Length: 135
Image 1 (cartoon, rainbow, N blue to C red):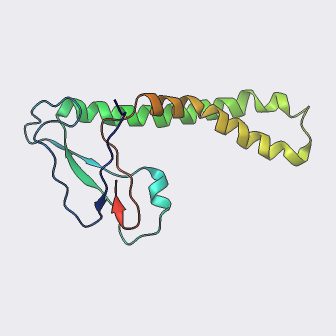
Image 2 (image 1 turned 180 degrees about the vertical axis):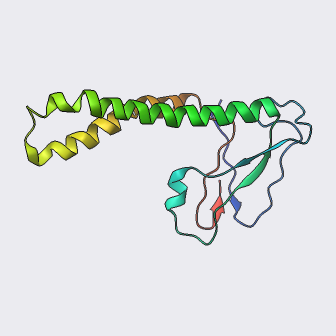
Image 3 (image 1 turned 90 degrees about the horizontal axis):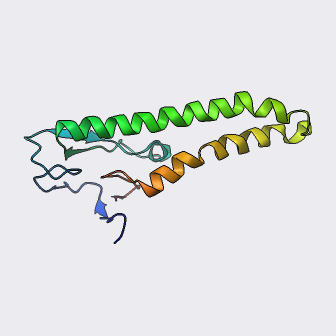
């Protein structure tokens, strides 16, 4: 069974969703959640930002927002702790010319738990925006 199903639509196409909540499939009672693309999509130069209203019950809306906020916050805290606690111990052993690259490598290494969690427990619904289409 695949982890996700990708649907590619033109950017100007109006998306229609089933009547149930996208996470728990219960009746959302008209409740929706605005979903915006990931930060990486904002690097794309385009005329306007993309967002979509998805049917989600209040509980799932709060749960998805909390999950996203926690993942970002935990990633920042772990990266900060690695830079604060590990990097000073390496400065005595690393030449000045590669110290910046070691710092970048440490931050990227500290993001591995975030990447693994996102890969093995993907969100119920995700949007990837391209110049001409939306997945």
